[in-house]
Length: 305
Image (tube, rainbow, N blue to C red; front, side):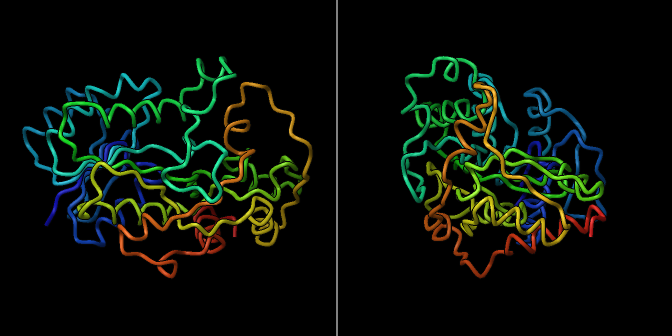
């Protein structure tokens, strides 16, 4: 039985990754800040901040064949001591990047598509202040140029929705379910209505991440994590309208210039080519849950259906 450690794995992606790891016969430990308990003898939760000191002590007691690190480091330099420690204490390390690293220059998007960090030159405010997509790219560049074991795999998940976050373009959280209860309209940017949504059910994303563990020829590689159903934002909104009766108003976007998630992501077409990750994991399109069914699953958890 292989031992897997999920760092920061108590949230949306970590929960479903843990479930898939268990289904594959792995023993799973999860470090998280959420107060969680397990009745499964193969699943343990450690409620603690995943500092280097804490991890060093854990590695003195436990051996992990694989580690998935879900924590985001706004300054890529802060990730370096963690990578040095993790890569030397496991056989396979998965680093969580994001599909948001991609620029809007290739459709559909493949893993070799140009990244924002390489093409944006005329927006100094973005380059100086943005701490998500650019931080992910900088960490990826570090991975390729260091003296640590080359036992890492980069994953770039699209937005992964669950009961904790029901994303529709720039709307997240429980905005949609609350609007349905109060019979209020939800405003969405009309410019995005016919754009492909970089969106998937978290259960599909967790399945893909777990299935990359221990696969031959996946180290030193990057994978976009998506079932590539490639619905438009309008089609996603229609699912919620049909299920909840919520009304959407499509209005012109009017976001502040430093709303990076709009200007450098949600206003882009995010059609995904997922052939690389399908080949690596051995999964096919029939192995994934349709986005509509994923929405139903999460709405039932919230008691909204």
